Length: 400
Image (cartoon, rainbow, N blue to C red; front, side, top):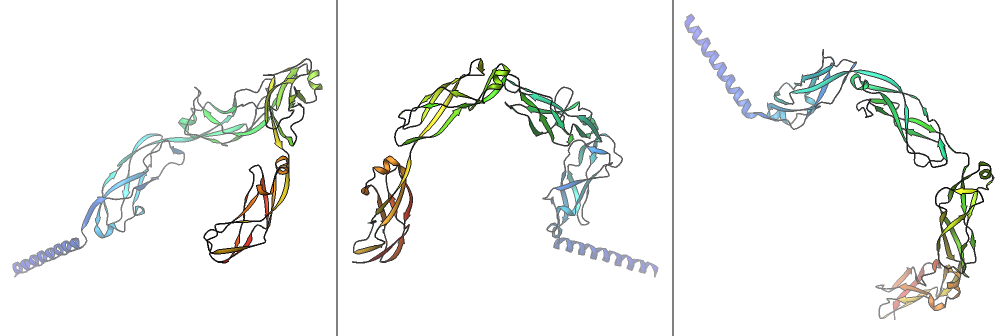
């Protein structure tokens, strides 16, 4: 009896196992397991880092995964479903090889991680204060001098990993002079310098910008004066001098301080002859200096004189000329005349004849009907059209 019961239990157990096996196989056939590389990189989080420690150099911040999961799960997987991290608990200063840990969703198995381990160097956070120094590069022009630069704020903080902060010997500002002749104030970025004059990377300076004021003044016996161009003669009739430019426009003179202080603030050029000129003039001329006064640099300047025609205006009344009217059509224009206001040199305006100006109406491809057409003006090149009155004409086209 017991033996028969034991046989029946074994048979039932075997039947149950077979049923479960068949069920599992059936399920897997409906939703097979797929092994492949997950298409998105997983961000690596840092956990349990001591508050006073810094990560000295960067490490790989993403991990690539080879995973195994049911086929139906793959379509719903996102990068945020995985928890990838490095655990820095109990790790002190120095280099460390830290394993990358990954917690996948319940139905997912991680087969491979890349990278499996990351290199992390930890260092203590430090801060040190420095008085910002100024490196003055270049120089002011002859006859000028600069004073002691003033930095605001004068103290700056250098912060970062202890090993890098300890390399900083000074915080400096490079101030490049480019011919400045007056006191100026500008913002500059200070930079951390090591003992051999190189830059220490990986630290921060606060504030990141400081203001530097550099006093600049002219030395006694020197003075900047303007250049005044002197002309002689008259330009051609109908023309005028519309502009005068001189390069340089200011020069530096020097001599006895008393004589320099008595100058009026300018020196004149030798006279530039403009007699009969009707085009622009360019001349290199010398400066006329008072006795006992000398000039820094070359004693000549370049003078450019613009000679332009005197402009005027004139109104011409013109009957429009029709163009492009198709055969078999006729057109009437209203009004029958237009007024064209021209501007330009007086000489050209006084010589203007009625036939020199035409007002054209383009009727090409127009069929019978009523149109508003803007006229076109043909005129000498030296003249400008100021306006056309009226600026649109009514044209009625009909069959002839």
